[in-house]
Length: 53
Image 1 (cartoon, helix red, strand yellow):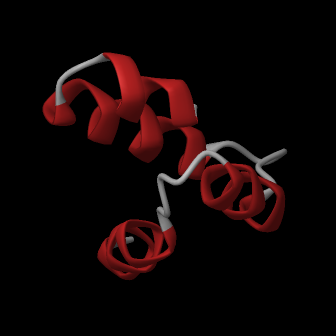
Image 2 (cartoon, rainbow, N blue to C red):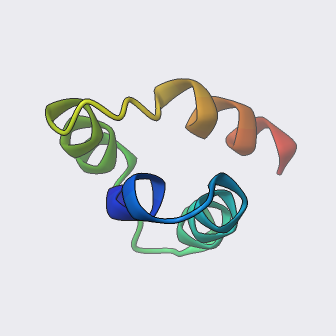
């Protein structure tokens, strides 16, 4: 998931993140931690997308 933000356009990455957040087996804490380690913090984006639902 985080690699989408690293290697694709932002539009594609946001679509992938929206799809991930709709999954029942999502792990937002794990995703956020991994993103921080890769220096791609997604916390704000996840919060915004989560509020849209």
